[in-house]
Image 1 (cartoon, rainbow, N blue to C red):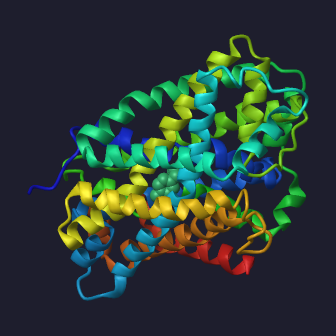
Image 2: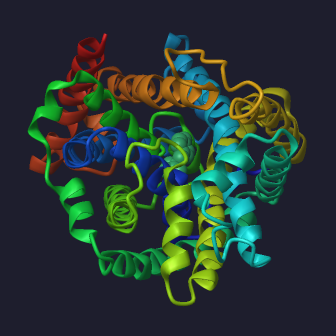
Length: 443
Ligand code: PFF
């Protein structure tokens, strides 16, 4: 059977943006920024995106396009009889880890959407507010699991439909809708009393924060997570791209779009956090408490909330399909499984792990695998802050050192001019050095 391909370059761009833009930009960005002091974190995060993220994004997509195989097969094809394919195993492992908790949070988003459909969340019940509503919901056993299962079923359904029909069409509709909504919400949030304090939190770095090594690891991890980098999602999407489609513009476009979504989410969340006296370091629940509080105050907020959680769930869906696609493509080739069989088996295993994540907010809330982190936070920490940057480091070393310069430049459609040499220098020297320094200093 011929390998599947994107319909158009735009189709690829939208799918890659769909992968990048997701819960990471809204849910994860807000709580990590909130936990790490706001402005200082934002500055470091932007530094990581532009210095490391975008050059690596180009690198990762090019590996897939050159090899036209999955995340393990690509290395085996381009570097036969070498251990480079271990990078691919890292990616497969990260995919299992990430989707297991991603599906749980996406399930929360579906639950919120449902409660806006029924009108339940138009107003916070009694004095308790949305903090108590959210806390009550996630600590129950079965209910969050039901929504996680529903979400995984949707992810599997789209991945089964195949690259072009399922993934490409879904993204063409969801992305613009979400952008529009976030802009409207940012305008409203900025008009609230007290919005200025939120702006100051997000844009005025507290210089003393730079002395904590953890903020660098967090900024790097957030850049990787948000750009879908280092795991092989973009490599796999790149493998469905024909050689005549030029990469550098696409990589910059994807990176800029993703950053736009993160900054605009910050403009929605932080003014409201301060206007409603919510603690910016509330952790993963932050947006699930802040957003409904905003909607409650807004004219037509119930409708806005409904559309918002619909769009957020779809953004999560278009990211989740890119995560599921990584092991699905691998097992399809390895065992000659059909797309359907592969995605159902992989997706079910991820759901199984998701059960532990979800119960980590209820009966297993005192299970803390790392430090004081619960199950979700621990898995997120290992995947985003360690595995993804290591995967990215390995990709940089592969293209920067295993390939000759001319081969590397050709793979990414750059010439041996100032731009090409800058990209090459970044990938060969700067990316490895920066990632290693950040790692070592955090130990
Ligand atoms: N980038 C996605 C988000 O921001 O929600 C999450 C993600 C997708 C992470 C794909 C990693 C990945 F490979």
